Amino acid sequence: MNPTYNDRASVDGTTATLVLRDLTLSDTGEYTLSISFGGVLSNAATTLAVFERISSMTLIASETELVEFNSSVTLTCSASGSSPSFQWFNRSDEVTGSDGVLIDDGTLTIMSVTRFDTGPYKCNASNIVSSEISPEVHLTIANGPDNAVITVTPPAEFYISGSCIVLSCSSESGPAAQIQWALNGTLLGKQGPELRLENVQANQSGEYTCWAHNSKTQRYTLSSPTSITVLGKP
Image (cartoon, rainbow, N blue to C red):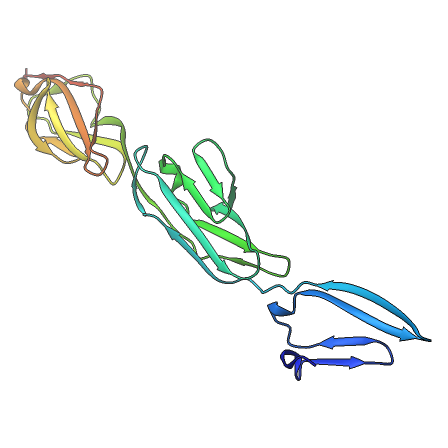
């Protein structure tokens, strides 16, 4: 008997049975049986395929800090085991190839990321005998700013001098946008999401706007003007 099969193989001549124990990948192949009965030789053959279970799953992103519309990313999934095939998931939704999304077995490439591509991503590797899920990968995607809007507190058609008015600027941005304020198109040198006009005077009447700037995307957006009218006390 081949030394490879020492202590692993046994043959029952009565039933023509071959038993293999502790199978390895090298046991894959075609097995033949020859039987002589009454001087007549008969042959038979069968094929054995041995598969290794999926293990050692990894998932790596080419980078994780990205900019919306500017960046591409490739996720690479790898696994030990026999002939793994891969499925991709963003959260619980399966990812399939489409315009801008390329899948090549163990790699997923997103050509132009958006804020909705943050993940978490995971891949499932499987073969005929097992399957495993990879660790998750999250992407951070800088986006915006978009839709800068001014809110005035308290809201009113006009204000009496000496009043306190608070203007708040919000925008859709990740990370949070840096805010600057302008009156009639001239920057006031005021920064932050809130502009407080305390003891306001008539000369502070005009069109207020806020500029939102995202330092990661290097993009700006400007709010629509908000009119503030201050009247002198009667």
